[in-house]
Amino acid sequence: MQQPVVRVGQWLVTPSDNQISRKGRQLTLEPRLIDLLVFFARHPDEVLSRDELIDNVWTRNVVTSHVVTQSISELRKSLKDGEDGSLEYIATVPKRGYKLTVPVVWCTEEGEAPAPVITPAASASAVDLPAPKSAAAITQDQPPRVKPVKPKRIATIWVWLLFLLALGTCVALVALSTMDSQLPRTKARLLLNPRDIDIHLLKGNSCVNRASQDAYAVGLGSLMTTSLNTFSTFMVHDKTNYNANEPSSSGKTLTIEFVNQRHYRAQQCFMSVQLVDNADGSTMMDKRYFITSDNQLSIQSDLLSSLSEALKQPWPDRMLTMLKLYQPSHGSALIHFYQAHQLLMNGDVDSLDKASALLDDVLADSPDFSYAFAEKMLVDVLRHSQQTLDKEQLKTLYTEVAKLGEMPGAKELAVYYQIKTVYLLGQGKIDEAYAAINSGIDLEMSWMNYVLLGKVYEMKGKNREAADAYLTAFNLRPGDNTFYWIQNAVFQTSVTSVVPYLDNFLASE
Image 1 (tube, one colour):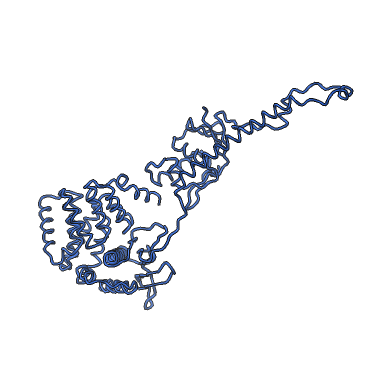
Image 2: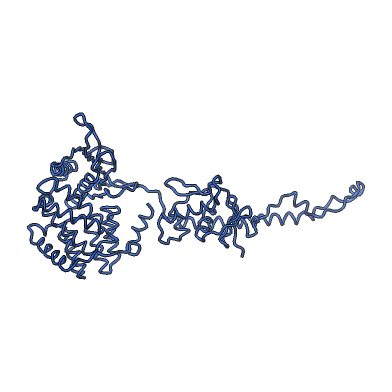
């Protein structure tokens, strides 16, 4: 059976040979590009999304949006064939997908149309007419017979009927396949959840000292997220590391932004923190802080107090006790702590090395800052999981971890159980690691706890539970940092195998 070819604009496409040709020039393309072009030809003037292309051309093999974009670019280049002024065969429709913009004609292998077009004039010329008679003969004879014409007309009608039947069958098959592949797709509607809050950090270049300011804002966002998720009925999503422009069902949005504002005849950089109710657009909290070297602690306390008042959410005594461990004796140590914390969230070896050095400086400056000591232990245990330490370094590390366990209030901190979990996983003590991380989750609902829970489940061979834990972690703090932790913290995880939904979600951004 001949495989149909198709004329796309000026090009004749022969799928069986992976070739396109025009004006005597013939190009051979990769099979995937031919499949992509044929799929566009089967859907002329339709906007096709990346997901539809992956579903039908790549048949849901694990590919990223970059692969689709690269294939479209290569196909455009082949169709242009070096002619800058030639037609734009495939147009990009912003935020929707791609569309073929040139005429499409389906043909047979020889380039002929699948159904011949037979006009009445052609039918008449094909019939053998009798020789003309004289006027007298015509008068005496019966009316001229038209039987030789009738079979030809019937044959023409049958050709058209068969052609229309074949065309209708093709349309029905295409419609059924399209309905089957697109049946689950529905128009998204979001019902806002008033107990959900998104925290965003707006990027800008209006202020100097961006690195320390961002680290301070990210640290405050992390503190507010963990505090509300642990000690209230609100569910908070820390999106300070996530800039995807997508709809959200969260009923409230807290935005942190650094802005320039005139203050005493000079431009000053202020930190703006605004809480908005997304249901009616009303502002629930609007604070502006001018940050100096000695007021970071007071700003942190005032912000948490204002947030408690705006949400009508009093903080319990256990949280206030935790905050005392979370605060150094002076503000400069807090800035450096938040810089180290941001490096910890990056998760790579270089960042962990820098975080460890910064935390050494913080402890030298504020030796009573117990939470910084605990975070230093977590950083060093993670460094050990990614690079080998010598015997002397290991001995020092284990001594410091033991010292942490003896510190007052340490066992009331989730970070203590995070350290134990990483250490026990390294020792292969899976059941003890499972008990440790669940103790940490009882104390604190944080993305890091759920990443480590996923690691424990993987070691137990429970990939479905691991996927649930990883998705929970990414939901609490979406972004590159959390994804890197899922892939690389403690040991390497194949996201494609363990949590393919997250892999596909990120590929569709």
